[in-house]
Length: 192
Image 1 (cartoon, rainbow, N blue to C red):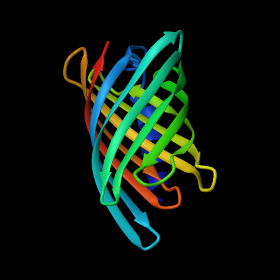
Image 2 (cartoon, rainbow, N blue to C red):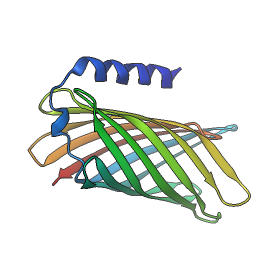
Image 3 (cartoon, one colour):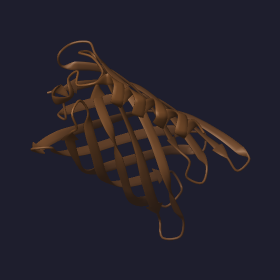
Image 4 (cartoon, one colour):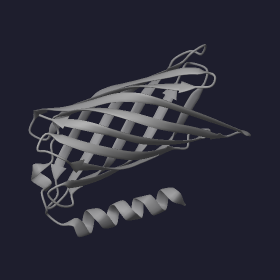
């Protein structure tokens, strides 16, 4: 229900925002985030907090490299996530269609690493000269040879431009693979 509601809000924002500054969206940036994480399900709830770095770099017309790293402190230990991959973005008359394919590696102290891929499809729009809205729906597949996790993700966020190069960001991610994961991030992004 929450995912459907969030997807509806994102779709409405993309349609009604119009052609504010879609060709002004930057795909060359480096960012930092602080996050709050909550796993629920299977009779338990685990919370954590952490930090992350992320970036994107245009390598050709509409093609960008993407990557991220985050470290999350949980009660049972520290989880580290690393992604690297590529994306394609296409102007769609006021907003950008975005697609990404990423390799992902996740490690939690005391457990074998999970590796696999993420596939995301979504949109970005400049709602006005300072506010960017974005969202994706994705598919995740991770395994360590004996255990596998697959499922959908929903990620919605915004960036507010405080200067030509600096954005303040906020994101929400829902990843209901086996247990429900909710992530909330705030951060900053440098556009170059």
